[in-house]
Amino acid sequence: MLSVEQGPYPHTVRIVDAFVSPDAPESPAPKDLTYVQLVLKVAGTPGRPLKAPHPNAYWVVRYDGCKTAQEADSQVGCGGMDDGTAYFTEEDMHSPEFGPGVPRQFGDLAADTPYWTRAWQLVPEGADLSRARLCEGGRAEDPDNCVPLGTVRRDGGQGPTAG
Image (cartoon, rainbow, N blue to C red):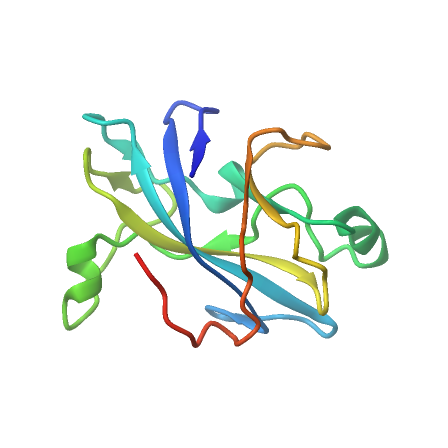
């Protein structure tokens, strides 16, 4: 689990699932690129609500060869996730309409309530993600607050996920 301490709203992030896919919501990947997508469980400090963390500002996937890929294609980002979905409670996810969720920008997450979100980042097709890590965002060349992604599925996100 990643403990994010930067910014005014500390929170924890647990990777529930990781996969590559040429599509993200409303944003197909450009030629020769794909997305690494993460399903994340996010929680605030016990007893305290928090503003929904925007993936680009708080998290980044670090992997071998990112800087080289970025030099070859400026669409590849190495400083933050590209985007993410709204935040959903367990109740939202089990409702027939999937619930409205909480906006990822300026949304408020309730205290003592876990939320799930999906975040993504462009990577070159075939990128070596075997040692990829989810890190606390920021522009540091070699951040030290990271957790391994673990197995990154290449089935387009169609497999089962665990909570």
